[in-house]
Length: 532
Image (cartoon, rainbow, N blue to C red; front, side, top):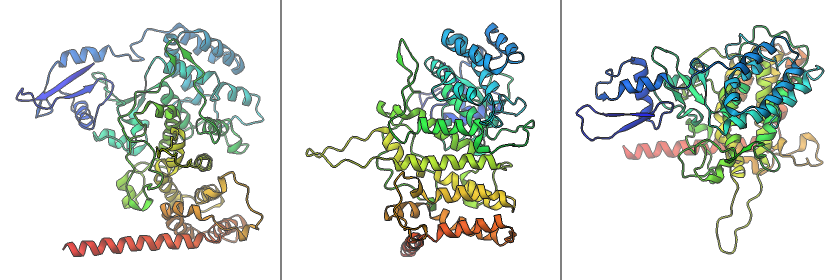
């Protein structure tokens, strides 16, 4: 359903069409948000809004949890959640997912996701995945049910085939994304484009409508940062929790180092589960690996995510998972705040567990990127070699999706983390990112650690990430001067950083990168002067 917005004079000028559940294009975005904010079709001085009555009627009839018929299945599951042990509930759910049609499963899905991961506001703790450790009786049960090839994901794919949508309040989106939406501007991340849900009359809350896969991944990612007042002190390592292991499983499954992403385990009469409708783009990933945007350019890469080529749809799940993890875990600054080097838009105090999961992401992305296959030699016919979408994704994944947001995340941690030994998690995350050569899967040579040189092929990476080697090292030294270095754990952190940055060849790469930046700055200044 859509309505038209025409010039006030009734002429045949440019027509804007806005979907009831989606926004199409940058022009429709601020228009729809203005309409919602002002609450009147007459608020926009340059336009007359037709068919307003019909629009309101259709909006009231839109599918909404509050308007749907009661589900007896859902009522039974809610009752069982308080009486049956987890193992029996999982067995029941396994049968339900196999036997019930998508129409019934659709009604229980939002509740089930909340029951597993907890509510976004932290009131409902769910299965407490962050506290279930490997020695727990429920550990393997949880992993089996929630694994990428388990019953829960089978439910996701079953619903994905029917194109259902599920709402998430804009208030729970990352600060910069939320600010863009509230100001009527398209967010930088294409993951949240065309997702704004038009609110029902009298409702003040804006929502985004996500497909089942996006909704599941959003809740999986948000589980890490949601407030949990009932969480008990960790009796075991965070890296031993069911949540940490699940994230690792999902990274390995959807960002495979070897082979391809497995096909959906669910098919229906229409064939395998399809990706969401392609985003408008006629440009593939190819070519962006060579000229990736440098961190020094102070701008965010806006290339649309998925190629319109159907072959590129093979990786939509991989890309969605990665974008959701990065946005929820790392994106707490806007571009303006980044340039001014100010604080986040809202209070942001990542936990040690949060940082450890980010390090897991960094290490896997380096391994995933390093598994890129060498380009085959050109054929006699000089036709360009065919590269699979997954291989093209590997070529750009670190620079395009992670680089700048991780820099801002680490910069904030360097400046705000307590001056104690818990900073080790932040330090190791930084050192993991600036040493991608550690995660290539190649066997190290026989040289002692102090004599190993950084391979020359990594010099472009060093130059593209120069601020992570220089600016963050400066920040670390500032911390070190204010830290009690009599404490052995604090002294060890200084030793670790010095050892990494003292690797033979690395300092030379950094200096050459700085020299190139200085030369570019001088050329730019000279050009400006000659134009005057």
